Length: 288
Image (cartoon, rainbow, N blue to C red):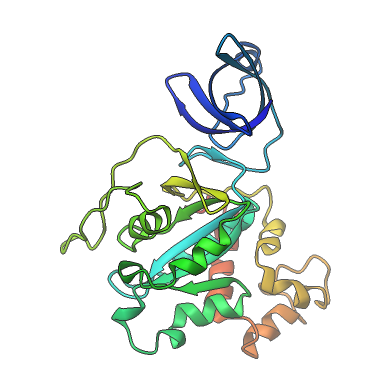
C-alpha cells in the first residue's frame, strides 16, 4: 500500500493510507543507505499479521531539518503587524528560505486590529510588490481563518515566522483543537513561548498541516552567488534585459534590475536584502 508518514516516535512510523493508519518499522536496508524515514514521506508499505514495514521511500520534493518534515508544498509565513513589530529582513529571509526549498509562500499578516491603515504597512507593500500572496488576519477573533482553510486542500502546509506572532492561535483555530501550546508574550523579551516536540501531520480541510512551527533555524547555503537572483521572482522580467548575461545587479552598468529599483518597480527593501545576501555569499559566508 501507498501512504504518507504522519508521525514518527521511537523508531515506529505511523503511515496513513486509504485503508487507515498503520504502525510500521523501517526495513534495515534504509540504514545501509543512510536514509531515515521522515514525517511527510510518501512510502510503500506491506502489512503482515498487523505488523507494518516500510518497503520504499519515494523521492522527496524537499525536506526541512527543523522541523524534520519532507514534501512540504506551502508555507504560511506569519508576521504580526504590531506586537512584535515586523522585521523586514527576517520576513525576507523566510521568503528566501521558501524559494530555495521550492515551497509556495503565503504571508499571513496577523493582529490587524492593532494598527490603523494596515493595508498601507511597509511590509504589506513590499510583499505585494514582490508578487507574493498574502492574507490579513485577526486570529484571536478568528477573522481571516476561513481563507487559510481554503488553502489547505491537497497541500502539506508548514507554519513559520518569529515567536509571538500568533502561529499557535492560527493553527489551533484551523484544526479546532489545541495542537500547539500557546504562551504569553513576555513583556521583557517580546516573544512567545512554545513547547518543542516531534513533528506530526494533522489532517485539516483536505490536506495536512505540520503541528510545530517551521524554520526555527534559518540557514541558507548557496553553491554560487549567481544562483541567488533565481530566488527573487520579481527580478525575472527585468534581468533578462540586462546588458550582460552574467549581471549580478550589483555594480554592473546598464542593469535593468537596478533601473527597476530606481523607478520603484522593485521594492528597495527587497533589493537591499538581495545585496546583503549576495555580499555574504561573495565573502564566503552563510546567510543565517
